[in-house]
Amino acid sequence: MNQKKIAIVGAGLCGSLMAVYFAKKGMRVDVFEYRKDLRLLDGSGGRSINMALSHRGIEALKKVDLFDRIKPHMIPMKGRFVHLQDGQTSFQPYGTQKDHVIYSISRKTLNEVLLDAAQEYASIHLHFEKKCTDYDVKTKKIMFEDQVSHQMLNKQYDYVFGTDGAFSKIRQAMMKTDRFNYSQDYIPQGYKELCIPAGKAGSFLMEKEVLHIWPRKKFMLIALPNTDGSFTVTLFLDFEGEPGFDDLTTKESVTAFLKREFPDAYNLMNNVEEQFFENPTSSLATIRCYPWNVENYALILGDAAHAVVPFFGQGMNASFEDVQLFFEQVQQHDLDVAIKTFSSLRKKDADAIATMALENFIEMRDSVSDPTYLQRRKIAQELERNDPERFKSRYTMVSFTSIPYAQVYQKGIENQKIIDEILANQNNSR
Image (cartoon, rainbow, N blue to C red):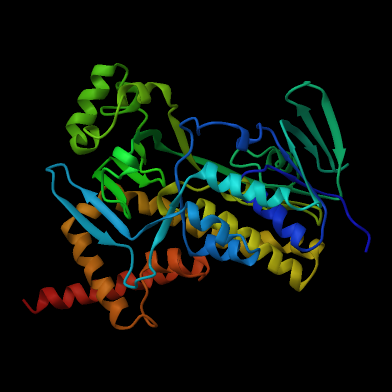
């Protein structure tokens, strides 16, 4: 078999997993990453929301025997632990079954494990500090700038896969081709990471196996557990307005805001004002584009093709599922056919999870404390518990099954109608 030259641009979660999939098929691949090898760096720099690993991502990892390596770094989260402003708390389980849990894991730790796995294959060659500056879709040449020597490098490959994130250089090159559709939509909110430290001897200062959430209508705080006893805390807040990130410009204003809105969380954080100003404020966008390929030799996957906001915990899981489904197409056909057909098969699902992620933001910041939402949720869980084959909630379908996202979205609309009828009957019988 003639070995074709394959390049993956981006050695993040999606790219490093994809490299392992190629290696499992006996194919040689070069992986290029503009950053330094993160395994040699300390800390995350306050730029990464903790990952919530669920069914789709787990299945993709299992296909290449990587899930068992990830397990020791995960903490199960059985549901949302809601902190109301008046100090009351409540627990909302994610599903109706014991195995309906999602898992908190550090993005950096997960990426390190995947890179370690990739490096074990002689057929995978990792190239760090090589920044992709352009890709010529006609000549198939990729241009890189060496971040150490600043020399420009030209590389030519038979196949190029862009897994280089929401601001993908491979996608930017594709945008110059005819009939390429692209949209980028920012939400008004940004996010900033903070931290609740571990207690004595690595103990947890809050309930461990849950996702903590402080819903405040227009904004919210969440906290995910880490294996060292700490919690990664993320504040989602408008960039502008009051309250807004542009309004919180002094330590005094930050202290007053956090004490007023999240007093229990504030009391557990050390040096939170310093964290607030040291860590960046990052934006959140939904990116849609089509097609994801150039003929039969270039393809983008993951955030490069369909970046979503993080409120359904599916960005990483969808990216991992991309890789799994793509290689299922490779297995059924071949590499050329899979590249040409993948985006047409996957696009509707990417659009569906993008929409559901935006809708889930409203649920998390607002609805989880609303009595009507809680009533509807109770009905949904009773229906699912009594007849799980006929009724599954949208959350269950997204997080605990491999049902295509587009089907999940449609079934979710049908579920709402069923619950509407039950509520109407209950109100009429009173």
